[in-house]
Image 1 (cartoon, rainbow, N blue to C red):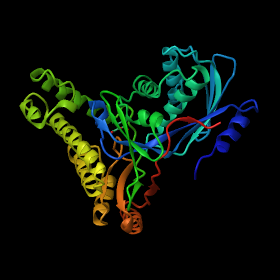
Image 2: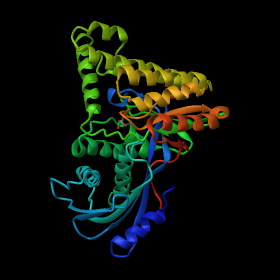
Image 3: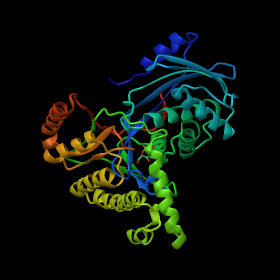
Image 4: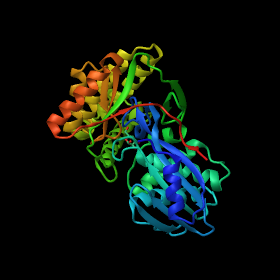
Length: 386
Ligand code: GLA
C-alpha cells in the first residue's frame, strides 16, 4: 500500500505535542546496470522509485532530537552534541546525518520527528539511503537555507554509512535518492560526479522487480570484503601502471599481469568489475539506439558475473534468473548489493502476465513462499511535500 503524508502526520501529532511540522520525502531506487562499480569510480545507471521514506520534522527549541520510527514503533532521543550517539541502528542514521550536516557548518537545532517507509527493507532498493536522504534534505531546508547542493547531501548520507553504520558503500544509492527525476534514469560517472538523465520510456517493455524476500544486510558484511578485493587489485595494477587509480581504468590485460601478486579470489572479483564497465557502456549505446535486446543481454551477463565471479548471489536469486530466462524475459539480474533482495527484469509486455504467474508459482513450489512482484515507476528524488 502506498504511504501517504497522513500516515506520518497522524503519528507525528499523536507522539509529540499535537502540533504539525514540515514533511519531506526521499525515494529508494532501482539500478538498470552498473553494479558494484560506484566504489570503483565507474558508471552506474539508477532511477528513483515511487516508494521511499516520508519524515515530518519540527524544531523543538532544545539540543535534542526526539525521533519516532512509525514502522518499528520505537522512540529514541539523542543529544546533537553527544559524540557517541544512540545505539538503535535506525536512529544512528538520523544521528549520523545530523552530525555530518553540523560538520558542514549547518546550524542544526533539536527537532521532533516521525518517519515511515514503503521501500521493502533489505530488498536491495536502498531503504537506508532513502532514510539518510530524507533527513539530509530536510535539515538543509529547515536549518541550512538550502545552501548545500544535492550531490553534497548524498555524500552526507554516504559518510553516515561509513562512519556511523559500518558499511563502506559507494555513492549510487544516496545520489539517486537526492538527484532522481521522474521518468528518467540517471547515468552517473562516480569519479567526476557528472550526471546525465536518460528518459526511460521503453515502448513495449516493462521493468519489474521480483523480491526473493531473502533479507540482505550490508553493514559489516561481505560487501566490505568485496570492496577490499577491488582495492587490492587496483593497487597491484597501479604499481605497474601508475595511471590506473581504480578498477575503472583497468583492463583484462593489466589484470593478467598482476595475477601472481593477488589472490585468485581477488582476481575473480576484479574481472567482474572490468566486465561490468564494458557492459554499462554497451547499454548506454543500446539505449540510444532503442535496442532493448542488447540491454537485456547485458543484464543477463551481469547476473552471471555477480553470481559466478563476484559471488554475491544466492540460490533464490539464481532460481529467479533461470525462471526469467525460461519465460523469455529480455533481461534479468540481481539488483543492488546482492546477498538477497530483488532481481530486476526487463520484460516484453507480451510475456509479462505469463512471467509474473510462472515466477510466483515456481518460486513458491521450490521455496515454500511466494516472491513479491513490484512494478517499477520512476519517480522524483528528495523533496518537500508540505
Ligand atoms: C549497495 C551500495 C551501493 C552499490 C551497490 C552495488 O546498494 O550501497 O553503493 O555499491 O550496493 O552496486
